[in-house]
Length: 167
Image (cartoon, rainbow, N blue to C red; front, top):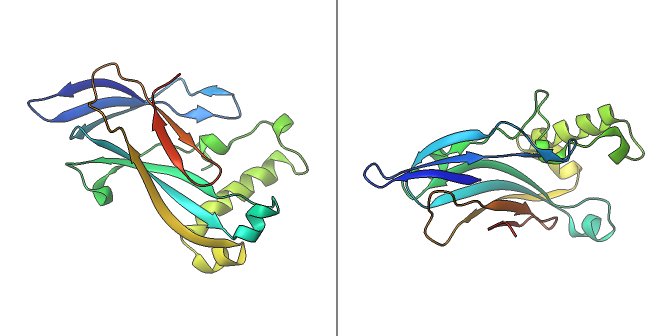
């Protein structure tokens, strides 16, 4: 994310959000440009928490799906949805190339990822797949933002998200 401008008179922040595509091992060339009322920008992700026994045995991990941004002026429910998915609905962060996928075809891998979105709508299917709970997790930058500020959102395998300045 890069802050392009903060208009103090209008209390609006303009920013570009770049998405990482794991298949291409690079950021997408086109950013999502957003102007949002407010100065405190929050990033909301949905977290699918799998049963601890499955995590411990290495079968599955918690999965974090970045979803939207909101601010102190724009409520979470009215936040701006992020353009995180490719043309078939797979989140860019989860995409992998053929050489990075083991034991299944890329098509099967992509189908499995698409089924995750169904879990957000179908609690019975989610429970059968070992999803223990759904939670929302958000982060925000706790310092004053300024034009040119760059931040990175890191997603942890435990389901946490971290917002920090690049190294």
